[in-house]
Amino acid sequence: MRSLLSRVDRRLFDTIATREWPGAQRVLPRLTRGADHGLLWLGLAAGAAALGGRPARRAAVRGVASLAVASATVNTLGKRSVRRTRPLLDTVPVIRQLRRQPFTSSFPSGHAASAAAFATGVAFENKWWGLALAPLAASVAFSRVYTGVHYPGDVLAGAALGAGAAFAVRGLAPTRAQLAPPARPRADAPALPGGRGLFVVANQGSGQRGETRPDRGPEVHGVLPRATVVTCGGADAPDLDKALEEAAESAKRCGGALGVLGGDGTINAAAAVAVRHGLPLAVLPGGTHNHFAYDLGIETLGEAARAVEDGEAVAVDLARFRTAPHRAGQYFLNTFSIGAYPELVRLRERWAGRIGAWPAGVLAAWHVLRTAQPVSAEINGRRMELWMLFVGNCAYRGLGLTPVRRHDLADGVLDVRVVRAGRLARTRLLVAALTGTPRSSPVLKEARLRTLRIGGLPDGTDLAYDGEVATTPGPLTLTKENEALTVYRLLPES
Image (cartoon, rainbow, N blue to C red; front, side, top):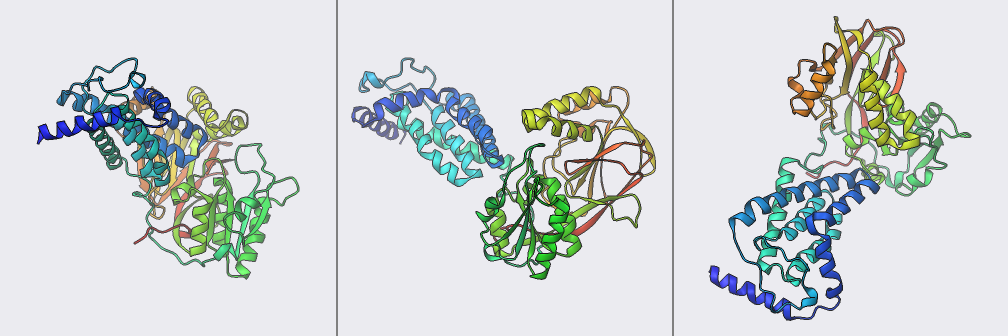
């Protein structure tokens, strides 16, 4: 059988080598050189990460991770396990041949493995992007036979290994579809075909600080043509709170829903109004980070629109901080923090309009790391010195101080993380983070609570919630309100 397969492989190679392929002579040799060391795929990933949104960046990361696993498998196991000589070039036209012939084992093809791994990895995040890459990946694989450096069997084996590497990466790091936020608990919300009965408040000021968008109505009408859009935040437009109240009253009269287009701060304000009026909320991501929308499972306006038209919704938790039980307090959907983080948010927002969000975040973190001072506070009655207090509405995934995202927005807990001050505290925490053991660091404490009391803060201490910065009004109590807000989101198919 092995001899038969080898003969078939050589005949196929000779057939491809002796046949004329219109247009291939100019394209395929250049394509195979461009794919050396994965440069073609790394370039595509870099372009997607720089120019695309969050879904494109996630697909690029998964594609590169799959490529890395495939390359390591081919070079450390595949080529060392099977020693196969390269094809003879007698039947390959000289104009097709590479200037530098590879000298490693012919089996399996590393180029085919990388191409298949990258395209398959991207397809796991978005099948249409994967299909768009398939012809390019197939061309790279075929170019290895066309230029005479591999047999067809080497290419097929390499492609199989590449696809397997992408599956292995998906097993270790599940895709968004595999880890979609739970549909529990489902909630009742009206189906609004075309957005009829939906009153959307679009914030012109959402995005980078100092950036104002002239009109966001077309963004909404592009996916929900029958929705009513109220623009706020501009020079001649009503302020956000007034616009939300008026939109909520209109939605309540017609039995519809409240919608909001903006970032986390705008959604925070809309959530409070929706709860007060007993309305479901449609979240349309339109800010810089959109943490709540992404954790909810909504990354595009189209996804939000489909949920609104189908009437699919869930109930999610809200967290609240207030100075006394009888006070209304302030909701937060994502995070609350005291210490170094509020200063980081302030600096990031100040610099983002000039240099962009990501560079501003890096520079702000570096500045805070060098200049921050510990804060004295009483946490649930215990006095301590701390660098930072982080509280998440529901449990965040991620180690230590790097919360990534939430997969359950109705778990009934506050995710509390405290970085305590002390001798070499920042250095010890940094070492723990670099070694992958942040949870074992004595300066980091974590807990899942339903109530948190904070007191004894110095006057003028800043706090941050959902990307907004404010001054601490006094002793605070943080509590949970389980399943308090109904929001539209697409539900997984049963």
